[in-house]
Image (cartoon, rainbow, N blue to C red):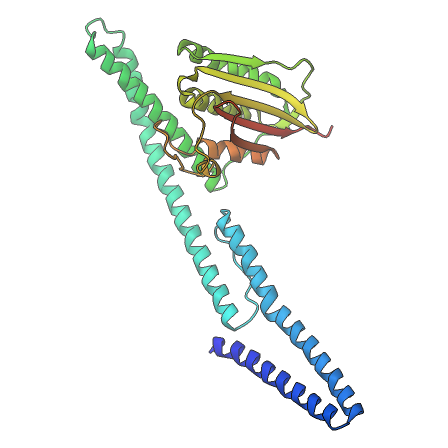
Length: 331
């Protein structure tokens, strides 16, 4: 019925326009100049009225639906569009609102499930890590057995990292992801991260180069723990995906009103067709390195909430470049 209403309105408008135009031609042909001028004015007014009606009842509702669909596609699940008319556009609005609500419910259910499973996994993983580390000091365990115990510890550490990523993801999904803002010496946080993770990288035969600035980097407003989390995650990615490059570069500098941090590896880079998706949740591409697939998504969320910009690109000469731009404090 709603479809018929809008179609009928358009049909009536078209017929009326044809009749008025025919009358105008007939009057003008028979010399009724004044009447034809008046009719021409009526036709003009009618066309304006139809345009106003079309803009109000068709164009604007469709534009509103388009914007809302973009928000839903960007992750704003649950977004509801105000219903402006009881016609086919109104029906489309109802369907989009229903779809948005179902996606939001599904997303919430998934996040709750992931959170519950992650919490359930933490306790046994902690026990496995603890016992595997203890067994390495048992003199009775040697050779292949000792090697197996070390593999168990390494894999349990990897799974623990994945669980931590999943828990962080659920905090973002349900709104429990908060920043504790204070003045941060961002250069010192980067250097601490390089010291913390750099020793492990050097033990693995990876050379770490840091380009320290020749000038003081101003303090910025931010959450030091979250920012350090980003740095450690990116250094870990560079070490894992750097391939045979065995070199990681880190730098910090000023660019306009931003502090710019760069972390680069010299591996094979990322296929161009995968670059647009690397920061999407659970996207892993064709990487052989196993992980949760949400580490970069969490990094992007942290930087975005700091008012910054996070990009991943292929560096000139090979390898991958992760760049962070954080705004300088106004004070």
